[in-house]
Length: 342
Image (cartoon, rainbow, N blue to C red):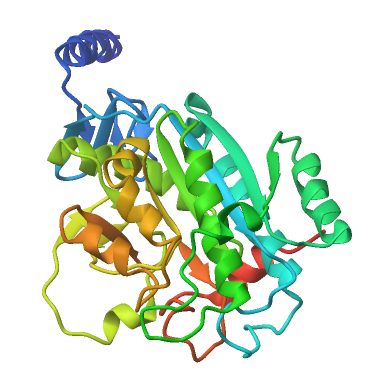
């Protein structure tokens, strides 16, 4: 009986000690039981709290001073054009609309995967250029299946066409496909004016890992809080980033390693503050075809921190030989199948 009483007594004092630690903001790790007793969670569970703390063992806690309040996901679609600047077939050689639908499915699945994202407002917009009525109905069916409200904006290219230079930076005539692409980016930027906080500009051929949106949001909070400034996040680990030997910086996100990059394509996540700060620079990408096209973005990255994950959180499903497409060391078929059409 004496041993039982001592056990109960020890348990009582343990509970009191845990409560005191919680009040003081300390966490207790029981490495024998593989758990954080003050959080009542296993060490390998998600122990960060969105908007509050980013916890990574063994580095400890980062107090979130830059919480994310909302996320606007702006998806640019054009299901009637297979490739913007190439005639090559994409991996799996399907119709373009299938990549568009799987992109949307993967984003929704990723948002639903992390329950903590329910704490922030998330909205969806689709800026579409010239998709058929049939394909627009397919897009609508996806959102209805998941019971998600979204806004469809049918792009009017003529609204922006007069502002676009007819000759690009290389001295060539700008193609109509490129003009419509620039107009679509312009319309997406206009839509971002109504955003509250973060904006995810995404093209319709990026299929996401199920943990991608949660990882991006929690990593944004962590690193923006550490640096006390807004940042840019690219979700893809592009193969062309490995064709150069240049110094970089490494960062620890929620569950991924991230590195500083100086170049991206046109799918990225950032804040409304950042878009407003560099509005003219972003807009210049919609008025003149630079060489490379994303040159204005790269000039922003000379002044602001842009990071990319290792391995990739979203795969750009282009031709298998494109250095601007399929991320290395990722199971492409698995990502494709996880977001198949039902």
